[in-house]
Amino acid sequence: MRAPGESAIGEVLVSAEEVQRRVAELGEQISRDYAGRSLLLIGVLKGAVFFLSDLMRFIDIPVEVDFMAVASYGSATDSSGVVRILKDLDAAIEDRDVLIVEDIVDSGLTLQYLMRNLGSRNPRTLEVCALLTKPERRKVDLPTRYVGFEIPNRFVVGYGLDYAERHRNLPFVAVLER
Ligand code: IMP
Ligand code: MG
Image (cartoon, rainbow, N blue to C red; front, side):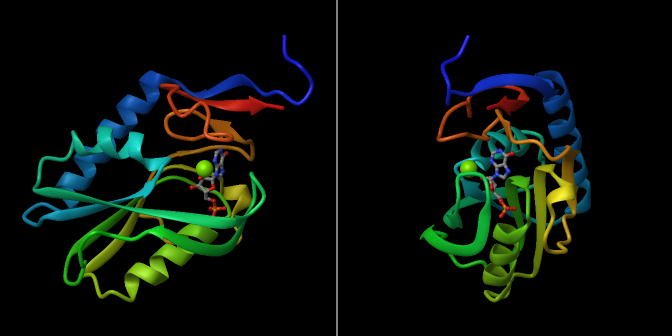
């Protein structure tokens, strides 16, 4: 039962077990691809924190972590592509192998901004690892080197993803019914 205007957790699109299995695979793949180097993971607050902390535990090359917080102007569910940096990185990334870790690529506008912004700081390499992607929603073409799961055009919550800051703690990814 829910009151009008309230939201509820609907269909589970990615179970907790599927998430954990895929995160392990991604960590192993990243470790192979960057073997012999050290990697800087950049987490985009807050949604990517959960994915990033699990992913890191499956990476067995030297790895460091830093965070950025950005706000995208727009409605609660649609980003505009106009991005403001709320928290910048602690350290320079020049000549580093950098991997941006994101919860989800939706329109791609936030990531496009981040790729340009971080790219201008002259990292050695710059790639993206996203847990989820919604190909149907993409507005800009982006090279996403690592992707966990492709999902349909539904608004989802869980495993870091929120609606009005709630539901990040769910261990699975589910559709939000409104
Ligand atoms: P984009 O700029 O449109 O790609 O939006 C990226 C950001 O929007 C993500 O980092 C999320 O914070 C948020 N977002 C996009 N789709 C969803 C969703 O289905 N659930 C929760 N947050 C989402
Ligand atoms: Mg969000």
